[in-house]
Length: 138
Image 1 (spheres, rainbow, N blue to C red):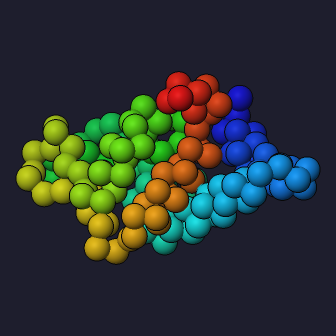
Image 2 (spheres, one colour):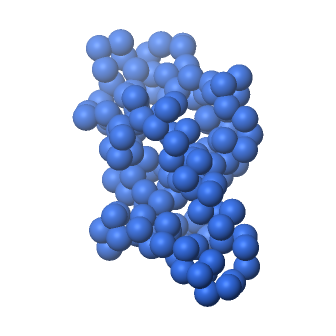
């Protein structure tokens, strides 16, 4: 399935649930995803791409010997990490184990983002994955 169909489904299903009178939690889920997208665009897209596509050559070290920002869409590996691991990476930052430098290549955002904003970003990232990738994590 194409990533856009999956993303639309994740965004559309809560709207249908609200219209059908189902649990109001669906509206909360939609709000969280929308907030996550906004935070992603403000804080993450500059490195990870506006559509989650990552750096052009993300699997090769750059001139500093650091691994570039990976994609968060279905072409990357973000979907393989648990929510807890993704939260930790966003909050505390991340240094790729194969980097030749000691610095964090993924900066820590715990001082810029609230826990709620970090969780919202993670929920937004899930809209960039295929249904199979989302199912794998459940």
